Length: 134
Image (cartoon, rainbow, N blue to C red):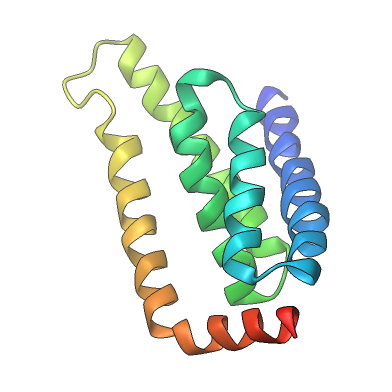
């Protein structure tokens, strides 16, 4: 039951931050600026300890949303990310040898993959940014 409740927060956050805020921002601003602003808002709404991670996650979720063109993609990514976080937090409490590795490694893979996707599709992103500003 607890997982259902916490995962529903992921759904609501994605609908709010990517579905509403990000979509409104990208109508008025270049896409890259919209990504950064919504990620900053997303990070500020989380506790201080998780702000840096939330900022990076906000960027990755927005890129995922742009890439797949459906809100379901960042919802699924958010749920996976959050559940990996819960798993690693449990290991940390148990004083596991791996400490935060189960959490950090998937995030690094997602970050590297997202940077690759941005680099590979930089012309599409730039074109979208120019359409918004013109």
